[in-house]
Image (cartoon, rainbow, N blue to C red; front, side):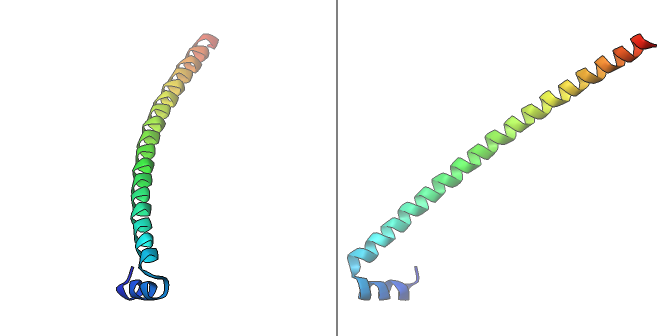
Length: 76
């Protein structure tokens, strides 16, 4: 908060309300930091999950290609 804003709030509302607001700001910032960390962790886990799924899909594609090749050989 700007110093002038704090001064105006103290004058109009009183010191305890402004002090409580500053404490709330600190709590909110702490919560935001925790949320950012949680989101970063979830993104990391998601990235790992997607990599595993991509590997499984690649393996399945390779298996289907091999089966298709065998079927083609048997037909000819």
